[in-house]
Length: 248
Ligand SMILES: Nc1ncnc2c1ncn2[C@@H]1O[C@H](COP(=O)(O)OP(=O)(O)OP(=O)(O)O)[C@@H](O)[C@H]1O
Image (tube, rainbow, N blue to C red):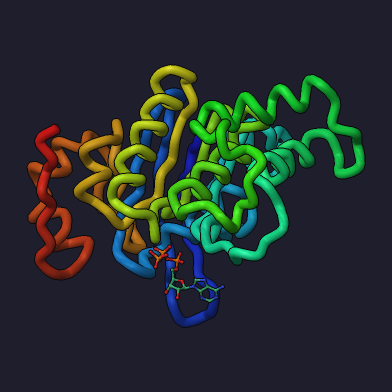
């Protein structure tokens, strides 16, 4: 799904943000990308999405070099700021989710019966059918987050990339949110790349963990990551951080 080889990146001449990052993600995976603030996680996601370019190495999506990749409907993206919504924003859940189809069908095409069904299907998947016609500004942070996931799901992507999706969302909603991700991954076979600060929760849920701080310090099994956490985090974070593995 994703193949990154020898990725380097800097925004200015002085500071390296990414240094020789190599990372592969296979179909069906649920990969958690962790790292401290400013470690380059969002930058790496932008490189995967073709929004920034590494001067070295190569980026492939679905086996194809990013420079020629065109099938963007296969890739869904929920950004970090998706749920920082102005409460006066004049659009319903249904309307926000509908905008996820515009890339595929063009802005001015009429939404037909099939599209309407697709939109409602995505809304049902995230459990918001009762709130489909409510203004998005009148939803909780967790419900807004689900709306943006539905928006990313409406074009039936094979790969879903989520950048810090649980920031500002309460613990109960975070737990339901992870149940939803598990369902998307296991039942619908959607591959997931999830960026998060919350190492404890992530290592409990994902199939693979990648730990980034400019360089990639670890990529592998979450249990192996937890078992070797002291050594990995001391090198990657530069100070002592401990993860508590959840027992459920
Ligand atoms: N547009 C930009 N111009 C210049 N520097 C930038 C820009 N965007 C990010 N940076 C810098 O690049 C480094 C990596 O930032 P990035 O946003 O990729 O980190 P991150 O791991 O996603 O951080 P966080 O967890 O805080 O969101 C940081 O030092 C940041 O200040």
